[in-house]
Image (tube, rainbow, N blue to C red; front, side, top):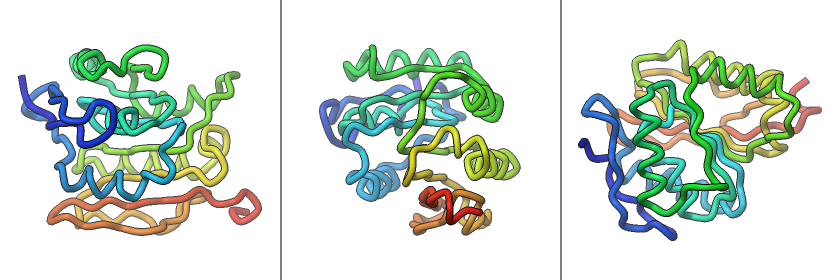
Length: 199
């Protein structure tokens, strides 16, 4: 089975994760280190939404470092099975994690319409690099009414993308805070604005 690297820190530190297949593009260790160095102050007891979850490596890293809950959203049946296996391997399965097999855009719309009060402090968005339209659609949803319903005040959204693919500095509720570049890869960090600032 393909390799998605190891958990870097926390309760599951050093445990190797499986990847669904060679076509999966796991986060490089240095990208993951930077991502969580930036997010670490907000991780303790955070509710995290891991979109396009792949192997689940990013969400599992968040759980290992103290997140209260992670919801993994992934459309591939095989990838969902791998996420569940990785959660068992890292002893992070159970009440702190949920794996949802769904298209991300469809899931966000359904979740925003649900009567539950599920809201998230951190959203990790790692779509295929070549699928810029999907990334844009998800950012627009999170920056609009869907984000108003699903994101806590001051929530953070982080997206990966190719350095040549532009992402907006501002997207409705979301305001870009910073970017980190690693060769061909870029992380862009957004913060949810206060509601009165977005009008």
